[in-house]
Image (cartoon, rainbow, N blue to C red; front, side):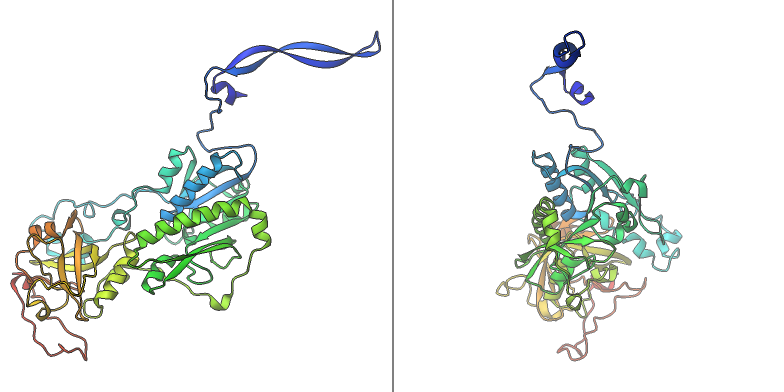
Length: 464
């Protein structure tokens, strides 16, 4: 009744008819009793005010949602839309996610440079001190503008956060096994390694997971990145039952998706999130039917995806051709940018490549000396929109957006004006070089046509 009071209903006296037994006449008598009640609303809006902690309805599934990334955002948006509909299959939603923002160090945010002559400036504090300046922060370098927690907060949903100490399983803040009994089902749209699986045992219908591949192919945490790296043309979304930390549950629903050419991880995650969110709602609306027809996965056809590390995001100029580098860029664009080492004078910098493409082979070269320089050399023109780079396979790449870690993003023209001074005089490196030593000559792999060709070092290359 308090919900109707908050909605602005008018109090009034209304008659309530009751049938009573009259002992004198030995008959039932209708008696009118006047009681105070709430009748017409004071405002046109007749929707009761909802609780600030969660959207609640009288009937339907009580959902505990685990979400992260673009797929989690799309699924949560579609679930909220379904929850607000008149014939919703859900009664309430509570959200569990990772913290949206992490505190970055001053060096990651482009803090003040070390004092001249200090141990930090000389590189004596740590053996790999340059990496402390060039640490790649996944949270800062991803390209998502919104988060699951922001979507949930805007819809007045209750949000809990996952915390995980080193060497310990993940935990949910202010949540224990007794709280799990309040929910009917758990929906997971994130990495299972970050979900406290012991809590699913207390949920009545267990959990279902939105997985971004056609299972049993590409189980694991990185199915979209692996599909792009392996040059797959078809992927999809699977809705599976989830009882443990493995993606081997029964398949409730699947839908394929054709990967367009030059698709990046950012584009693919948005497309699969849009597709998977609608498939998830359809599955929830027909949950009993889909569970009756659920299919077991073929364990013999199962493949697994790895957990990618910093070395997987590195460009190896001595081994990777232009197409392989571009494929790696597409696989991690919007996840973690690929990077290389850039030497400016005697300082090693981590250079993030945030925009590139394969040019038309018929496009003329920037200079006649293009293929005489080693792979990774930067060629430019002052008013050009790209930086041209040769690769080990004789092909070339065009870089359009770059960022020195600790600085801001720069397009090709801004990077040239700010950092480059000699056309073809700077070469990007695979690994850092020891301080106060010249940049070593590029070593071609055995069997390469230029294996015995001597490479000259220009001023920017040497660092003096």
